[in-house]
Image (cartoon, rainbow, N blue to C red; front, side, top):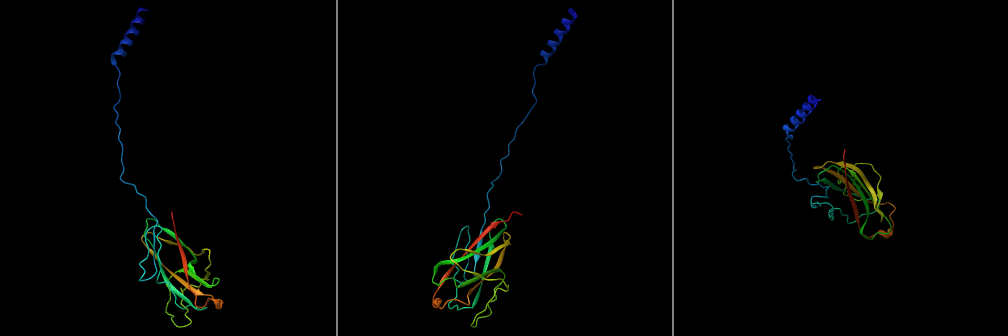
Length: 193
């Protein structure tokens, strides 16, 4: 028994003589550079004299889209360039509606908006300019109506659109000598794939 007690005492003394010890450790942290969000930004231009508008939500008056004496069945074509000056690809959709001034009786105007270049070579009465694509025109009404959906525009690029403005062949005689403006609403929607 004395031998057992002696062995236990040696064991206890042996453990206490080792003391406590800790493993080394270290920590580190990473601070990143600035992380800034990008923007969706479409820029519109409608002719050599119209520089366009840039900046999210920016609008402008397209003075080059004008017709001085439109008569029933005539059609005038205009270029509209959509530039993607933002940071992501997007698709663009466009609506048309009565503008801030609407002097016509009813809804005699028709529009068409397609990807393409306007053919403005016809300048003799009755003017029959075109967008080179056979797409049905849309009635311009008080409520916005979609006239274009979906062309994809990669960031840093632009797409040429053609806007056709036409007076209906059955436009009422009450529309003689009247004028109006159009409201075209462009919406860019980010593409993620």
